[in-house]
Length: 133
Image 1 (cartoon, rainbow, N blue to C red):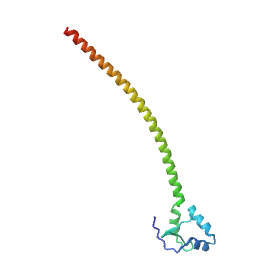
Image 2: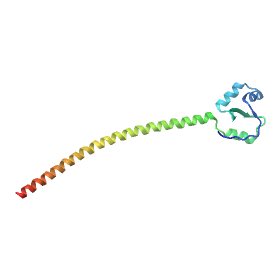
Image 3: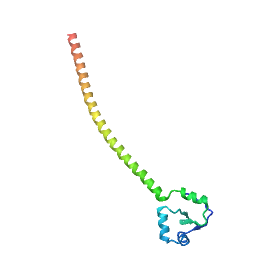
Image 4: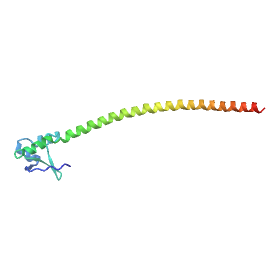
C-alpha cells in the first residue's frame, strides 16, 4: 500500500458528504469510480478536506491513477497477454505439425539410405566371393 503524507485535515466519506452538501452515496460512487482520492488508514477510508487542501496535494491527487483506471489497464494487459498466448499456441501447434512431417520424411530417407548401404555391402561381398573363386 502506498503511503501518502498529508497535512490537511482528513474527513470520513460521510463527513465529506456533509461538508460538500452531497449525499454519502454520491461520495462512495465517486470513490468507486476513482474520481475521488481516498487515504486508507487502518482499513478506514479518509478524504482530505478540500477546503483545507494545499495546491501540492491537489496536484498529487490529480496525478494518482484511480484504482478503477489501474484495474482497467491491468485487464487490458491481461487481454493482450491472452491474445499473444493464443497466437503463440497456434504457432507452436503449426510448428509441431511441421516437425512431425519432417521427421516422417527423415525416417523415409534414412530407410532409403539403409537399403542403399545394405545393397552396397551385398555387392562388395559378391565381388569378393567372385575374386576368391
